[in-house]
Length: 349
View 1 (tube, rainbow, N blue to C red):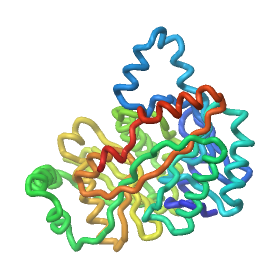
View 2: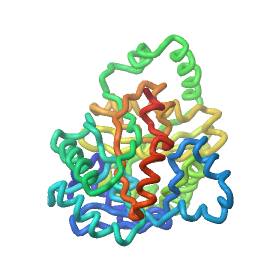
View 3: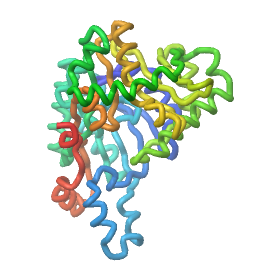
View 4: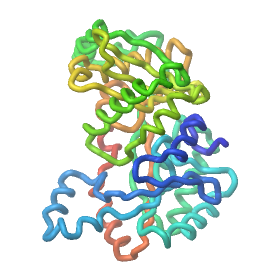
């Protein structure tokens, strides 16, 4: 089925539901909306200063587990936005979600609801706007979400992209892109024969783990089974860009082709080699060149590292999270503390 707000292939959503991240449970609600549950650290998106103050409170180690409740999420961790359905109107969905899950979970988060996204239809944006209003009527608290990076493919070549940067930034990027001369770049497709080789599967998953382990936020650890199913699926239409240096496999990018958009989803790298060869920057511009060659309209670059992506010329579209807290006292406290949680808007404006 196709969902409201869907920018991904069905195969990606199916893989998430079949093989959810480690220690997650995932399912479809009775209304046909993807749901998952997991322990969630409430300080995940708090500012560093606020985290420090909380961690310095008396007996923090004794009660910190109260800040990691079992949480119900409406959405997935593999889709850019909350996936919704035409089966039910927004007001009914808001009521059903609260009735069904609020008694089971102390925290409930409807994640990544789009705000007038240029990547979605008018219908999708309107439904999400209605749902935000309906959830607020049900007592959910509105929290600023993340910034999704994207670029229109509105240039004739990479030189035109560079012309949009300042002189110092152009000079810096050209210096970093000299590393491309040391790299062999290939394009594979999901379903290719190599992805049925266990050694190849192991290597791809290890490179993903390398990136996961060095990231600041550790939330959804995707499983090897998820990756294998994805890499072996021809229907997923994944474009897999591989990077080798002197015969050594040092990184890859997994992107998806949907509605004439190239959607960048997963990366894997070998450190420190990938950093030494500026692989992040090389892959960014290679992806843009590839999107241009293939005639795509947009390149969608994901949620992470918004400051870096802003420096590379990305545009951003924002989201809201709607949070329901079962305990009324905690609900009042969170409303007063919302300003201490980071918003991507301030990081890319």
